[in-house]
Image (tube, rainbow, N blue to C red; front, side, top):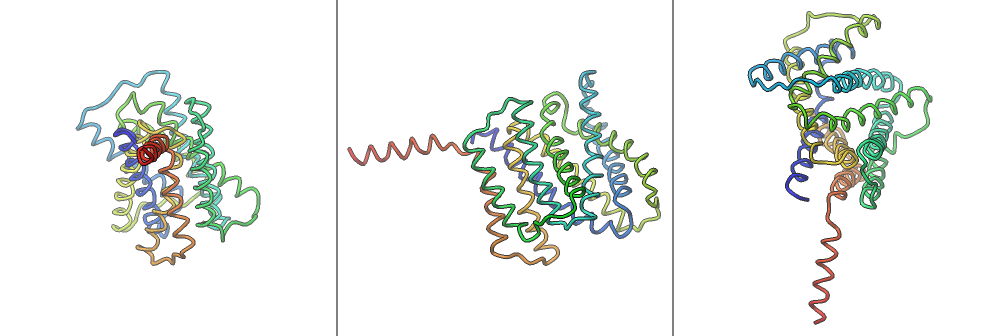
Length: 303
């Protein structure tokens, strides 16, 4: 890997780790607020934090008219991703939901890369997909069964939205500062969530504990960190390769569950997580140079 690809790879790994921390906050907050209100308040704090940072840094680019529809599309996807994921996870086991979600996000990232960014599907990428899929089966295999079709479809759609959201950042990440991109998109998501919570009849309450508001602030800051590193990382990494790297959230999630909640890890699960991490490296390896080096060494030994 060259230096820019190495930077992009490491940034997407950091993003994956930060995404893996999300369940800590959602579990802490789910006892006080419903899922839609949780999303609304998190978006509010994100807009406040990002607004202050962008204002004081004074790094704003004028949004081109042709990009307005892209921002509206991406902001709407943030909301849709949440809706469909919630609809799936309240019916399906978490393991099944995540398995379908990540499979869909991986497929979507490859399709977006192929059709919209003219990325080629190489043998290394196919190998990486195979390794990642086997790793996911090893992690979630015990939970994978046939359930009701509708919630499984919701999980698939949610994963697709996640894949689209991550990869289409390449459409704007070279034109605008990363913080500005997040500010615009989460301002759109915040506004779009307001009618959603009114229609859902979910209980709206703001008399939350100090601990809840502290969790919201930390959750918002973690989300901003994850999205900043994700959008910046995709500047240097292909959409297809980035989709594989983002699967690192799975082994990081296993590690967080083990350290934070004392969840049990089997040897089979650990190996599956390692296989997923290995898959994220494969597309970035220069196998041709390695083979040429090995061939040169053999020729030298013969001579």
